[in-house]
Image (cartoon, rainbow, N blue to C red; front, side, top):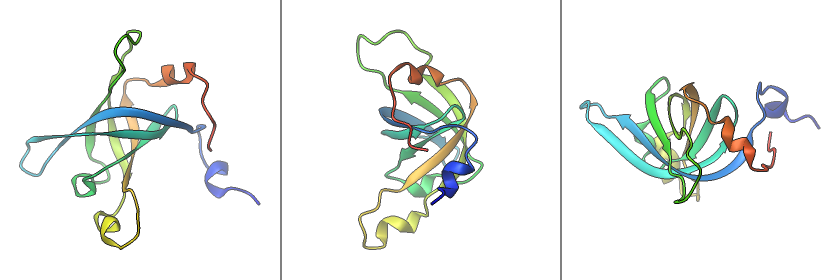
Length: 123
């Protein structure tokens, strides 16, 4: 059986488990921050779990910083991106155990250095 999503992806996607800090702007133009976990990434984007799916909308600009462990090599861990998709805010109230997620396309910055570690190809 052919995996539709794998066949239609431009870039290979890799599993990840990095803590990140996401900065978005609310309707009141105030910065909102969320510390969460990046679940996977590619050369062009990433996915992360959110506790606040209502904050994210397709096309929204975000600032993202990977929270590196102490004593990590110096890396460019900050970049900007655009929300490509976001879980429906009502998904977390449907009675099932579901972790809402957000998909981001990277606009500025580069996370290819994450590939220096051996990663499992998921798609």
